[in-house]
Image (tube, rainbow, N blue to C red; front, side, top):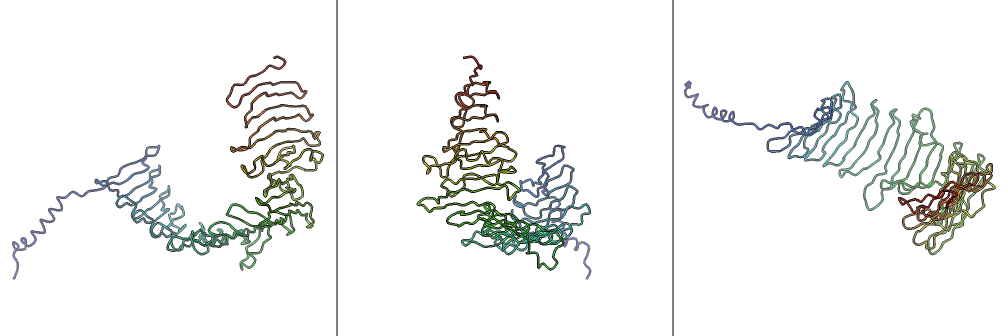
Length: 468
């Protein structure tokens, strides 16, 4: 039986009412709000916001009008896709957020005009912490790095880096895992020809234990890898807490000894020896170490070599009943100690050295204060300097120091002399400030300056030479 047009119309009438009702509703749309602009007037930051205040997405823009970032939002926190573009408009980063936290795979891309989207790195996240195996590549497509994480975001396994020529550059199992027990590991670094350059033992992310440094060698890499661990050692010793490396032996490139330190963990350094190219001892530092009820006490003389030289010695130090040397030795540079033979030994000195770029010999006298328990190590008391023998060998300067809880300051008379022995000036310090009568003379000994000072930012009284 055929249905009439009227009965068919009655059947669809309710649906027509529904469509009419939908057409009468207003769909709420997000609108863009510009938050910040570049100096040229183009938009820099904008957010898309619904009328009720909810954020749909946030965008960042380059000053040329190309979009830099786009981050999707839900409930006003990042949620969904995030993308970053280069200033040329190529995709540089693609990732996901979930309720404000990084989630899933994040992929970064090399910047290329051809927009070929060659991967630079792939990283994985779970609840905002790293998980799984991360990988990266050089621009030429060779592997650049790999890292490994467990489900809790802790670093695991051996991390590796490669040079862009495909040769292994680093192995690192030195991870910080915040466990009760220390986690031992190692770090190895290699040159572009696969030869080893550094080796460190470590625990919980810090270099602690034995270490070795090697001379860099050149040539083609060993394709078999058998000789990559073989190289001429340059220095070996013990590393502690990632910042203190104490070498016990240094070598020349031909394998001969340059310097050997014989020490005991509980007694400190006992002997330092320097060698010539034939492995003959040319200078030796000896320490006398005694166990006491307090700190370990050491006395003796030690020497420091000039920079870039294993045979020239530019410093010597007397230990002052302390487990630590009173002064830095190896920073003095480039001068011949023999030129000062007549000057050395004029006064008691804890430290004698030659500074880089200076012609003077410096001497410092270190000793404990009246109450050493207040300050610990010996303090600097007197500083002197001398002209070289070629300039007469006379004293060039002398000054006195005093230490308190705020540090070591000039305190007492400070004088300087011309090479001919004539006094150049005489100054007086109190707690680091010039206080009292101050005098200056020319090279003939004539008074040129006389003033009275009362400290920093205080009035200065100038006296005219020859007049009261």
